[in-house]
Image 1 (cartoon, protein in one colour):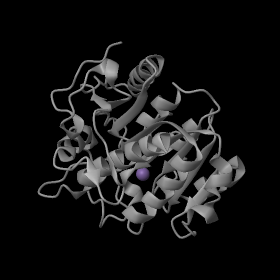
Image 2: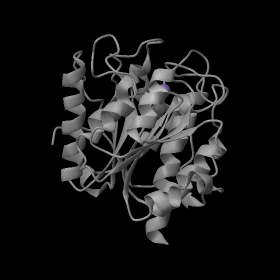
Image 3: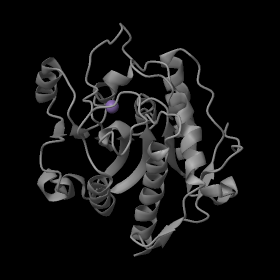
Length: 284
Ligand SMILES: [Mn+2]
């Protein structure tokens, strides 16, 4: 196990690796982003933001305490395929230790790396403004704009919040039989059919912060007007965690911007919420 403790810890929790159920992995990958650079600073800023938040909130009525070990930042080589292999290996090590991986990005491509550490029966529920279904962007097969396509080669995927894609991507998606929930579809968990699709299944959740309306999350690599609110996403997360067996999750594409940290605050809150939902479920 190559993990060492980070200098800053999520929610200021300092706990022994052996006692932790969750391992927070900061993954500062920022290699194949095509528009605004800076997602490599995302993991650190989300951890910093978490330290300003409480570990309890009245809505969730659950205290997240003494459950998460924060690892030091992964060392990401500049070559995409090597970077992906580091992510796969680290997530795999966390799983071998019997722990639950939480990845903080970094570009969305890290989800592909994580997916390679899981079996083919895990369903990937991906929140994203972009379909990420492109072939060979900039002649590299491993690219953040191809993330969903790469994951879906091995794992079933459900895409939620999509609003940015080409007609070619749309045709490919229809051919692929991947379930796509567009941002202008009904986002009620029942209308999406999440309960029937996920009950009894192993699920990994991936949140690209650009799924949100940029008003809620302006600090992302490729912002896209329109999009979801925190309460809409939270309602969907509640249904996913209640229905499925959660095996891991990530929050990606946070790109810190000057004098505005609401994106990293939201990203940190999502991490706390998902841990709380998962722990509450086990206790009930
Ligand atoms: Mn995206």
